[in-house]
Length: 175
Image (tube, rainbow, N blue to C red):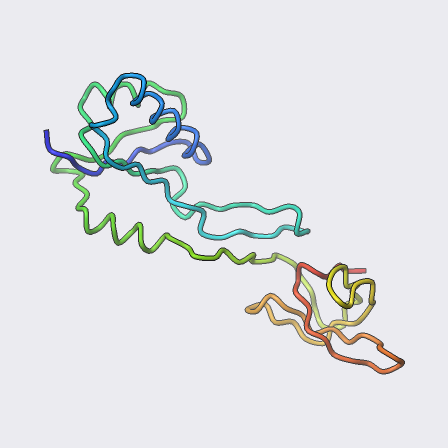
C-alpha cells in the first residue's frame, strides 16, 4: 500500500488529545512504521481578552490534523470509532492530497512569533490607568488609538506638564 496524506476530522479543540491517543495506539500495536508524519496545525494567533492573564488560542484549521502514511480500512475504522473523531478523508482518488500542497499548507501555518492581538476598545478622551511599565500607576487621557500597532497614545502629567506616551493596549486599564 502506498503512503498518502489523510485528513482526520475531529471535534474542534480535541486535535492534540486525539493525536496523542493515535500515537499511543500506534506504539501499542506496533504500527508506528505505517505512519510517517502527524501534523496538527498550530495556533495562528493569540487574542488577549480583557487582561494579559487570560489568553485564548485560536486554531487556523480547527477540527483537523494531517497524517502521512499507510492508513488501511481497519485503521480508519478504529479511528472513526473513537469519541471526537468525525471522519478520515484521503488516500483515494476522490480525496487525494499531494505532498506539495500539504507542505505549502504547513509552511504557511508555521508562525515564528505569535504576537498578542488585544481586543480592547479605547476611544479618544477615555480616562485610563497605566498598569505596567515605567509609567505604572499614572493616570492619563487617550489622545490617539493605534489598533494596527496595538498601542494607545496617552497624555500623562509629568512634572506638571502633559506628556504624550505610547503604551500597549495590554498595559492599560479603563477607569
